[in-house]
Image (cartoon, rainbow, N blue to C red; front, side):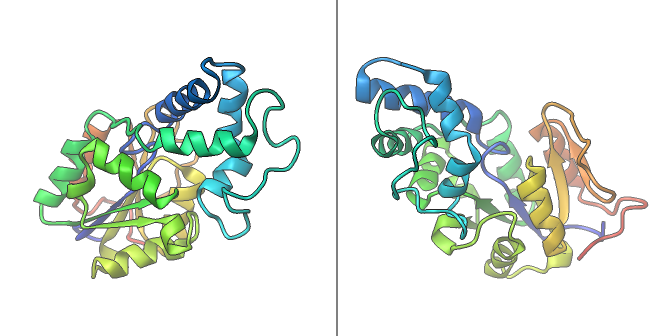
Length: 237
């Protein structure tokens, strides 16, 4: 990779925040608020993790708005309506940051090292901003790009290019750090940006030549602190 990086773009959920844990906690809180119990917790958890819900939550251009009525069969048939559940769920999710171990040190270290730092996240603006405030990460990023606020969603490379422009950086000197092959990796590759693939399960099967693997945020921090050219890994900027 072509020398030191001046700009570092971090994914949020699954990279800096524990999205899976936040989802489960938010589902529990939403159901408790609506019914005082947890009926079919697993069914509602599958609902929020479904492709249909994730597309809406990211405000992808081809998806209906999260506030639009749901089609029959898209949500569990028992319990609250999908509309009232979704409202309660998003309210609960906004107070579930789930900061991952090492996130503060990794993001803060990148910024203290003199690099421009950005967070690029798929999600709803007020929800993600509230979670960032609760996580303690908000003040550590020089820019925050959220899909529903800018009308672009990963893996669209334009959301990464927008972050690069906002930071006054160059693509050739920018690296993306993320855990998603279909969103972070695909978008970074399409935008011509270097990529660090964070997989706590150490499943790097989707990694491509030129990518750098990391199993922990501590390993990410080490990579970013070095940020030197890697033999045999030419830049894609």
